[in-house]
Image (cartoon, rainbow, N blue to C red):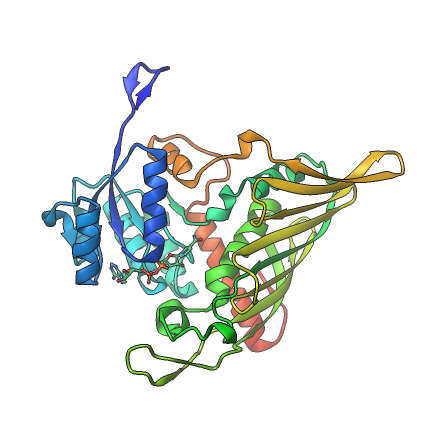
Length: 358
Ligand SMILES: NC(=O)c1ccc[n+]([C@@H]2O[C@H](COP(=O)([O-])OP(=O)(O)OC[C@H]3O[C@@H](n4cnc5c(N)ncnc54)[C@H](O)[C@@H]3O)[C@@H](O)[C@H]2O)c1
């Protein structure tokens, strides 16, 4: 690709991809759609996945690593994309910081908050730019909602409600035991998986969490191991709800479940301000519903197409970061850290049955 303004070819970045499972397919597709990315190295602990996906992605056999540390240290890799289960997130990010290598790492930031604390110390000693996979910042309807909130178009925001619902964990689906139910690997269930996105959306729109009160539930207490056929106890949450007060005094209610039959991938927010109400959802990512006073005393409800300027992509922003340009609202290291701090507050509130201040 060519930069007309500078009159020079734009740099293509050599990516090292860690974790070659389900979500890595989306990352590869997004990189291809953007251009200026070339996956040159890959790492996975699953030998078969490494060989098969390595072949499909055209990665030279010498650039297929069983050990992600070796991939991160490879001088022919410019940046890291990490899509592994949660128990390796902290070690991968730590290795990126140590190597000074830019990163796009999947959420949740870490498995548990203690890991995030250790990373913060390391980051403060030597900050390295990167991005955390809070991908819903790139849902046009949410981006537009942020613009309207910031411009005061809804008036003072008094309250909001956020939900993120999926159905795949429901009893009717009879989903087998997998790493997403294993506390040692995942840390939390729905909370870290979907709740981290809700928390990020609230922070993206309204600022920091001040105080919250939460409850977590496991609806399906054991699931069948697909390998052994034995039933295994589930130690993480299927459902979480919490209410919170944000900086500026807006209050929000949050719920997330992977057991909501009929919900494919339903992440949505309703925002209630003094001058209007706004509904935005991943179900209709390119439009919002806005209820506002159009003439004195006259309320009108309209469905509005999101303006083209809100069509920003995660990998477009990652390119800006790699090019050394700042982009507004990019989910960075500190967004990951603060998110994990809120996740921890939710766990403590639920376990101790009390409000927690942040
Ligand atoms: N941003 C989003 O909306 C979104 C959506 C889905 C998943 N995710 C995140 O992506 C991550 C991966 O999810 P997934 O669904 O792709 O999981 P997955 O189980 O399908 O794939 C994970 C892959 O990582 C590999 N792996 C495990 N340990 C490794 C290690 N030490 N080194 C290298 N590879 C290792 C596994 O062998 C597997 O191939 C999770 O953290 C999840 O939270 C984010």
